[in-house]
Length: 284
Ligand code: DGL
Image (cartoon, rainbow, N blue to C red; front, side, top):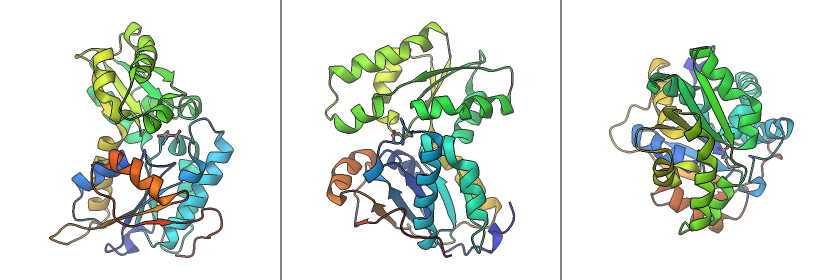
């Protein structure tokens, strides 16, 4: 973890996702860390990430990270499960090469650690995009914590897009949720990782389908705890009394980002700046 202590604590935390979904993660960060400033980038022009291959996701993630490095962030949080699963090691290598050495945290490990801590029967379920499930990242992360825990993974290729498009939620989403939860019910898991940024928005439906005794772990809540710990232990936490600010960048249409994003963040969005990813290089 070399180098991070020299990054000024006054800088914002950079957060990125394939689009608006990561705002569910930012929401948790804003609640857990009210004194911090945040800059969030949604790569909406290239949404969705969940059906893409690992090489492409790695390239996109590095491009997006370069934009945030130019915004002088002190820490980078990969709010997207698909990007974390495909690109975390590459991002960590690239960010350590920047002048100050910026640390990168993803959402997979915190979710896995929390789920292993919660399960009582040693059977955990995962709902996630095909990119996340096929990467095996959650499987590896859980094995690292406890190799005796069983992970049952279900690819949900259409759920994120349907949640993003559909509001109010209709019967098609309910039917899809039931279908994806079926193998987890049969597999008698007692804990389910919502391994995709969008799924907290249908949490009540998932809980109803899985049953009241199943515990759910969301990426945002688990990641917020890890970020809090990382900032404090590295002396990077903002030392101010009042609330910090948060601002938004996106690669697609800014007004579309605002319309859909407000629902995901559950807080007002201020200015949204449109940026190009892939044309700016890291310089910090
Ligand atoms: N943000 C993505 C994830 O958490 C879901 C949406 C997408 O497919 O881009 O995996």
